[in-house]
Length: 390
Ligand SMILES: Cc1cc2nc3c(=O)[nH]c(=O)nc-3n(C[C@H](O)[C@H](O)[C@H](O)COP(=O)(O)OP(=O)(O)OC[C@H]3O[C@@H](n4cnc5c(N)ncnc54)[C@H](O)[C@@H]3O)c2cc1C
Ligand code: SF4
Ligand code: SF4
Ligand code: SF4
Image (tube, rainbow, N blue to C red; front, side, top):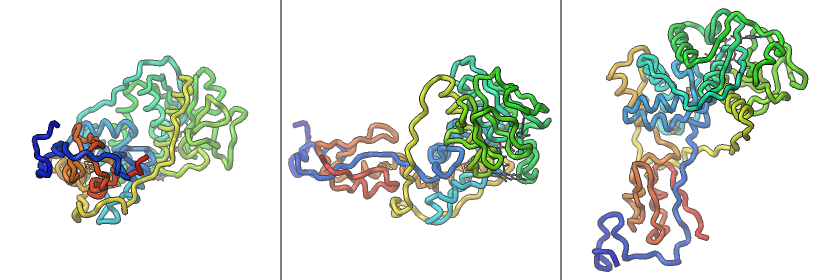
């Protein structure tokens, strides 16, 4: 018997309930299970919004930028002109106001440009060559991810300018061209080649490449396609990974059937295609995709939150004061479905059966847990689930 307490004594700290073994009568047991925040599902790029806000609230801007750039090569662009569907599904919307996700994204993107941060590739060169047709958001995103994955990319662009509709369609008041230019340079400088003023008329011209990503948008129509590629109303039929009837040809952005117009959707389609192209070139299988089950507003324990108005982040200056505003805004995040180390479960467990392993890591000591469910009730964000014993 290791307890220093007498039987019946007050349990005064975690781990001190060692006299009260549960035995075999518990019916339910709590399990920790991080789930999917709705904002992450709502972002067509695939940004891990919750994780970014978690880092930003503590002023960890560089770490947050790294996480953001894992998925999005163009945060300064998206932070300005994305229609921000992430905010439409933000659970905080039903409480007071949604998080200012796109403004925080813009802040991080602009900070990265000012500081000259560079996303480093961790993949060795593969020696594989990929052609990307079109330098709009879909083509740029695909080229970025493929380059980071170690492939040699050449972009072919019909116009003399880079950026597709971002450069020639979207109004300059909404997307300053200087921001676009700097963000595009930071991507092109990663080591890809770009040939502007070079329109591809027939994909046969690209036979020397191991794979092709086609993202020509809707400006000029499709180039001549190889046999076996299905087209519907001038758009190419693809699966969720951008795959077509030809194993070496992938398509994304506005030129694909089912495209949901918008820069973020185009970036997301380029990213998915890059994953698929990488797997194809390495002869590996694609990851399994499970249908996400985003955490519902009703699963948030509102007792732990107070109303606080959204803090709007001003554009243009990146001062310490603005950085503080960004932190305060990120602090409003419920962190839906993802443990943020608030310690409620650890603190409220009447049997002191929760063991804290790290900053955001906990474990239940089932020898002493009675299955009362208080931890699950008091978790503000729906991370703990009670499951039947058995
Ligand atoms: C006026 C306007 C305003 C918009 N405003 C917004 C907005 O505020 N927010 C938002 O999210 N979305 C907006 N959109 C939509 C958004 O711009 C598009 O959905 C997005 O740019 C599509 O990306 P993409 O990469 O598929 O194609 P594009 O951006 O169209 O780029 C395709 C590129 O491929 C090149 N190309 C075409 N054919 C060839 C070829 N054969 N060989 C070589 N290169 C070729 C083209 O020159 C072009 O540069 C707007 C669109 C327009 C037209
Ligand atoms: S890209 Fe758009 S949807 Fe995604 S996080 Fe940014 S603003 Fe939200
Ligand atoms: S509250 Fe935070 S985690 Fe929840 S949906 Fe909004 S941004 Fe995402
Ligand atoms: S109560 Fe807090 S510490 Fe415990 S699982 Fe939920 S978020 Fe994490």
